[in-house]
Length: 240
Length: 329
Image (tube, rainbow over all chains, first blue to last red; front, side, top):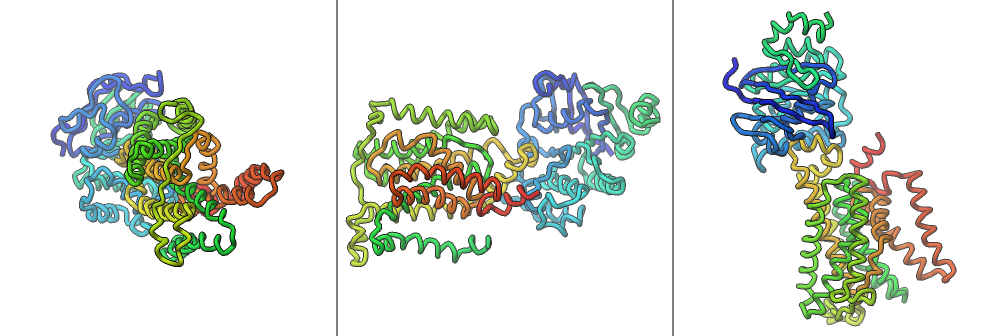
């Protein structure tokens, strides 16, 4: 299932705000074709890590490498051009743009005049509801639909690696099921997935491997099945 | 109502109405009306420019008048150096664009209030520079510009004979043409991929960056493009008035432009045009028609309008559909 290393983090430090050291030497690896989960509590540094990889935040120390090329210091639109998209925490769709326009924005990193018909088609196949609401303003969608729109927007860039930051946040369980189904489907279609979740049980079920982040450091890592049985993980994240 | 206002046919009707103003003024023997029309036209041009940064991208700029000043002074100085007027206009616009680009390069990392304060500072620095750079600008005494009558040839046609002598009418026509072009350019920008990216930036800058929009470059683009409008307005102003002094470019004028854009409806072309007509035209007409002891009350009129607007129509008179949605939710 998994191939060569696609994304590698090597001793990444990042500072959040002016002095909060949110990441202290994080090293991890995502291999092509995998679904990898990153779990951890509030404030563990998960979102900072996503921001650092996507180029919103420059690492203070350490290296981020994507398909053999260094990412550190590149702005987000260039990171995206290399094939790495982030669905941000809290969805952050554009409420006053239509569904179609939201998707159009997602394709911004593609070369002008790129053939986008296939991408729209793909997004509407994954999320039929978006196709039905294409002329509606993003802000009028339900929470679940907005999450789908945020995912669709990220897919418009035709990423090789899709990162999702808390895709289940604030959604009804039945909608969360649906979102995770689609994540699995996207992965089957060949997109590598890095998933950040507070909902550890969900994340560990969806991913083959996982990392546990605590106060800016990776404290354990391994395949999901063994992490699910790890007493420390059970106690801290699974509420057992 | 909105559809009607933005339709093609309405555009032509408005253009025809604007073009007929000098004839109306002649019929009424109130030639000052044409002058008012020209001044309002320049305000429209400036406001459409500010609308690109403030309306589309949401960048607050309290020193926009400085670029009107750059356009005007550059034109005046070039005219004094015996450059042909059309070339002077082109060069003045280019210089305005370059200066705004350089300013944008340095200050666009600021946001919101901070950006507003810095642009306000720039506006004042520009005015003080024009006031003190005697060698180039002749300081507070101002610069004379040699006359230029671009549309005298229209007088060859009998019904338009009066145009030959009246520079107000000639410049009025030029300004109307410029406003029409500026409105058309704005409409195309708004409907373009770039225009939608600006809206995305205004709505959520982080999400825009994560969508792959080069936010910094696009802000700079909007900031720079708005200088075309300001530079052109300044050049027309210098050629029309044939006299440029620092006094024309005080802070109040920048505030007036912001008020016009906000009153009309940020990001809405017809709204901005209407705002300029109301905030620019009515005080001038009051000045012309009221007896002297009432003239200062025009600022009171201003205050009342702005208070009423904040109370009853915070989205502006004719807001763009998107802005309306933003304020009603």
